[in-house]
Amino acid sequence: MSAILERRSVRNFLPKAVETEKIEHILRAGFEAPSAHNRRPWEFLVVTKREDLDAIAGMSPYSKMCTEAAAAIAVCVDLNAGAPKNPDDIWWVQDLSAVTENILLQIVDEGLGGVWLGWYPDKSRVAALSARFKLPSHIVPFSVIALGYPAKKPQSANRFDSKKVHYGVYGQQ
Image 1: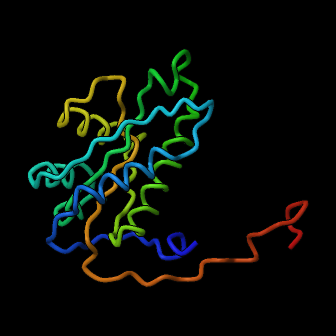
Image 2: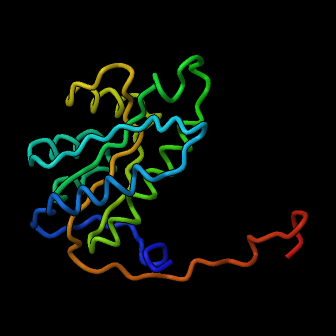
């Protein structure tokens, strides 16, 4: 549970590359996420070139930290796998949320920091990333995770709130 308690959004990074081995561990954690109907509709785009990270920083007002990040991972859905017969079948959103969280937890285990950047369903962000990285139309970016060595260790906090826990029926604490 330590990675869960230690995980915080890190937006400032040291100018130090992340080792390929750590990136692979992070991706492996993503692949272990649960998936509705075991479709596993995810694809990953790993970005490490400075000019590409800087481009991602300009695609959203919330992605400026990519100018400092050593890497970014775009978690994408393959719509052919995630919603093969019905575009309204969006269980893949839950799948890719689980993938993104697994990645964030593994980032902590690797001694790194990261931040979840929402991408889908913002059409302008999806279009910008898709165009820059030549994603086919059935591959849609869901989230981008900026990562690297944190400039300072984030402080953990106890976020447990018993007032938000209900037993049996709403309002029973």
